[in-house]
Length: 456
Ligand SMILES: *Cc1c(COP(=O)(O)O)cnc(C)c1O
Image (cartoon, rainbow, N blue to C red; front, top):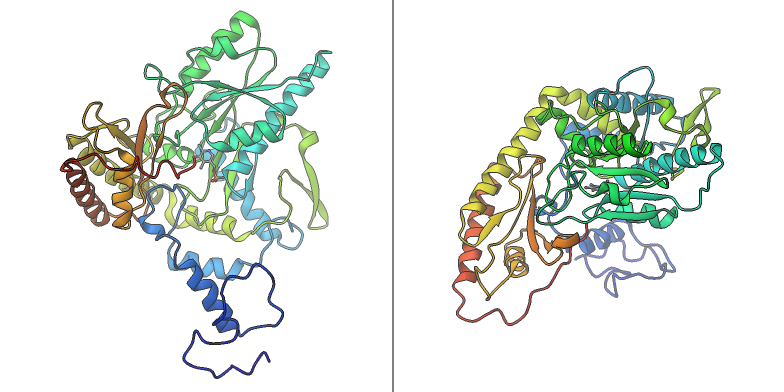
């Protein structure tokens, strides 16, 4: 039964293939590996072209040495420290490199870990803040019933998950036209004795702008002087923590700011690794409560781990180390600079068009956003432009801002390694052409557009 069609050509007519390729139940028999391979491959042909996806922050290109390393290592399990002690050691080199890039005050008193991405890293950062607050409250004989966490309304969805899953009240500082970034204004109204921390974004996903870490810290200093409350900060540097050390080395946003207790980043964003790796580092060992840490066996002894997952691929951690070694500070700087140059080129081009005004220009992380000039047209909106660009193969998302700006629609482009100047020129030409097409409409578009399909 199974093998009878082994020699059957042409393809696409073999058993299992000619009927349906949509299996929502496990098939009874086996099929040839070629057939199974082709079914899966063909099904994914309808996925987008990753290089033309300007919506995502996630890396889609590595060199062939990285690919080889990946193939050599895709069976490694990160949790098996005992079986893969060398991989475990490399994990530690990586977070130590990050601690150094982020100016940890004492290289001998620092702790960190890899994760599956920034989302898991943010959960761990949030859990450490919550547990520290609980310890302090219990020691003072006070209630631990009602923890809250402060953040901008522009946070990434992982923080809503953290607050939801771990029973922490979410307190937003709404973004507004006067304060498009959380800059400390209004913190005094939301901070209280139940505040476990403030999350600051280094790289707001909506616009690519850095929140001013030192201003938030200064405001918390003021609050402490008045009320005695000592509120720690966590930096969500999913994108920016891999950019700022190279492009804005003088900007103080990291452990140079004393209130900053922990920083996370995504290795698979501007860390330049394939999807599946994130990092978190705490300013010192004391910032990570001991009772959150588990021990796993390692070379006959034991090794501390702090993670939500148990088994997880180890290959991406090796790829991160490869990137650090291969590129060095110079290489990372050159790559991030090239992405920023492309972002500045594109934002300049978009800003020159009559229809648009820029919200950001790519000078923080290489990401920029723009909106339609108020009053420019009543015939089309940015969702229509997004659709038109999609026809040409480009994925450029349009979506509403957050907080008090939720009535404003913006469009955003994330410039990553791989969006070359050549491609950017093609993209700019298409943005110009499609904008002109929409501007030339004699009647309004009949349909309000597909609406936001994009999630932060
Ligand atoms: C992307 C992003 C995240 C989530 O990161 P993953 O690595 O995709 O889990 C969290 N915070 C910010 C600011 C982000 O940009």
